[in-house]
Length: 549
Ligand code: BGC
Image (cartoon, rainbow, N blue to C red; front, side, top):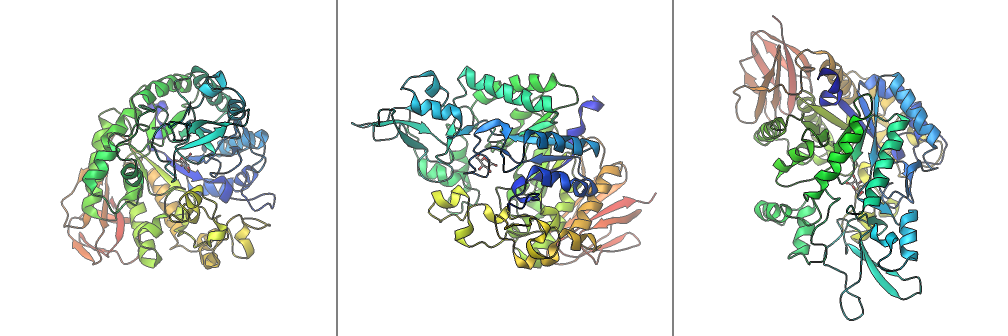
């Protein structure tokens, strides 16, 4: 059992390759850039990196529109660079996870080109969801579903003879055609893709839209398509929680039973390889208890737990989210995961209000997260306490911005290139960065934070080091935590042996008296005082304590 568990407790760092490090001056990050900065990742103390897609792609959705899943886009390098990256990481005991996108292919994929050049009912069209439209001239889409990115979920093609033709389904951008997972060729092709990268040495996969592959009632209208579209948004405010949960608990294109059969067959492939190859599902499911079904012992290894990605910094909310997660995953013997940010959501500091108060809360939130049993995911730049950058609309590239006519600004603000060092373009590129890097980041650079012991980077380094060495924190991910009585607004928990965490989510300082026999190990802010078992913990601060017995 022991050797099949590295991922249960790991710290995994998300590299968004386009914004990590440019090596050739074209203004976009690339795989050679990641190799060049691999020692940074090693010094941060992460166990693995997950790279967002770098496959051949017209890049209409940041590479999540894949035109060839078994090749590297020239903007990012070559297959040789992917191989060299795996080797460079492995040399430093860092594992490597790639991001696969099985829900859809780019309309630039050969299969799609073949489909539009073939006839109705052809083998080529059966790989996607092509249907005739409704109405006298087929001018009404096959159903009323909306795209997650805004606008309709169907686009109409021209038949090879030039006439108005069939419609194809795209849950995301119109350049991302949904694949038909009832088609055996689609299944075989993906299994080939998995083996292709596993043979190259990759340690696992992040599975994009893992809850979306199976669709049901595809020729029926949804009773409330606009409501469903709003409910699917993370920032929905004009809908009651009960209405939202009701709509999300039965989505004809998400979390259908059919997806589990696919993952059971993938698991057999992962297990047939040496060296604990793993998978992590990006699956938004409702109610959240359904998440555990993706990590049953013959399915995937991990599922992102997005509770913290949208959670307020509030003790009562967080305690109940943690308890619920631990209960649900332990029922299927899986390990929990904790995610504070990723490339699809506002950066943590921004989400918590921005500025110095946002940054203070973000540090406290990170220390809470890093002490929980299970795996943690860190999105590049989170360790630097970066905020979303302000961007002029003319710089935006996210299809969400275009498909909503600018109503939703999209996700570009969280995807701005990393500031490595002070100076023009921050050591990211010798050319023009693909998104402008805010000049206010001069004091947020990695060089600057390396030299400051109170920096966010120093805090992340310290917490990851202690997380990997303290016997209580590196204990099994199955370990239950012990909750300690604490005043409202305060989280207090213990892990054995000899570790205690106290987080104060209130504005004011709290005085607590249960720290007898403990000493301060790490704190997210200054001003924590301990004497004779009494702990004075400033507002929005988390501290780790260590038994001194
Ligand atoms: C990815 C997004 C992407 C979408 C469509 C997601 O969940 O994380 O970045 O736009 O899938 O592939």
